[in-house]
Image 1 (cartoon, chains in turn red, purple):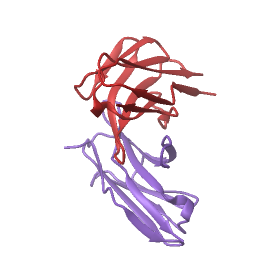
Image 2: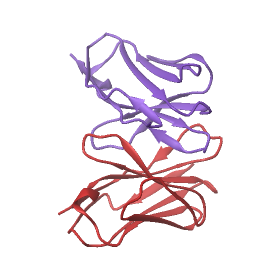
Image 3: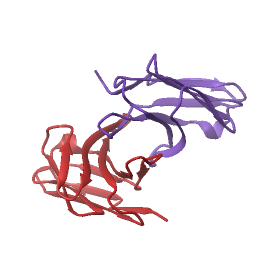
Image 4: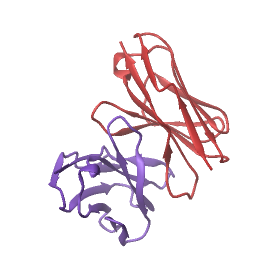
Amino acid sequence: SQTIHQWPATLVQPVGSPLSLECTVEGTSNPNLYWYRQAAGRGLQLLFYSVGIGQISSEVPQNLSASRPQDRQFILSSKKLLLSDSGFYLCAWSVTGGDSAFFGQGTRLTVV
Amino acid sequence: QKEVEQNSGPLSVPEGAIASLNCTYSDRGSQSFFWYRQYSGKSPELIMFIYSNGDKEDGRFTAQLNKASQYVSLLIRDSQPSDSATYLCAVINTGNQFYFGTGTSLTVIP
């Protein structure tokens, strides 16, 4: 069966510090991978989308970046965090032609 | 224009009533439509998906799709307090990307 791992679960970082969130998927090949952000009390905002290794589409220009160094690994990064980067970050995967997207447990990031 | 739009609510219904949640989407070529439920502080979980025009029933849940009107809805019959959550509508657009609405907050009052 397929599983998705996302870590860490919670993170408190100072303004201006770097960020690296990692997501890995098991049990499937060539998944579509997504990073979403959810601000407090708000909906899901698509940040990045990837259909394959090294293929990243950015939905929202900002100080975040994403990389996909391996087929089932998706990394969200920032060189310098802003207060506005606080939120609940969710990684998700789907397969083309599949019937759902499946989410990791999320990372709650607080920038102080 | 946003890809997927939902009324943010909050929507309150008494226990045992029918809750009706609505969603519209902008990409007319979208083919797949989903409803997710998200409890506070948790990840969204899939409730059901629908691909064809009409109704699809699963237990107390019924999804309705009207592609001509670009409209998707979710009905929850015999609403229970445990149904209190945020409900997210999602579509796969012609670019094969998942887009989510902002969600509708539902409260079922005992």
